[in-house]
Image 1: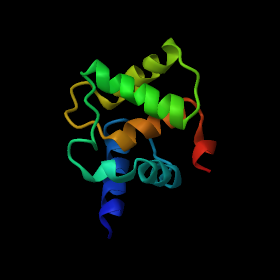
Image 2: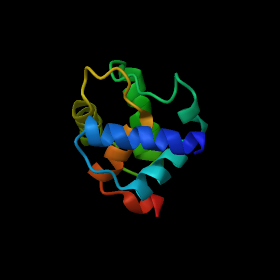
Image 3: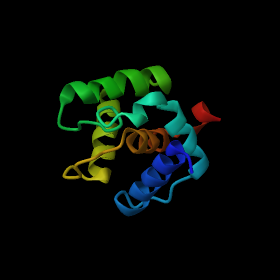
Length: 113
């Protein structure tokens, strides 16, 4: 099993156990690949949900640039909703898992088709 496959399995487990979602493995794989090399770095593979600057980066670089959404208050509301679903007290909020939830929330699966 490759390192990426191990990470995808870990992310799927988080979606099932912590977020109570049944992951679409094909989509999760594509979202994970879309994260690029950041998933291999302990610092960048997670999202610092308590840092407003980090959440702003997720909004600008992922929701607006990658998913093509228009800026508005609903973007930050969706990010906060994903963080709540993951669990605010959860120490490691993996970027690929949060991105997956945001793709599902905005029904932007076609971006990864």
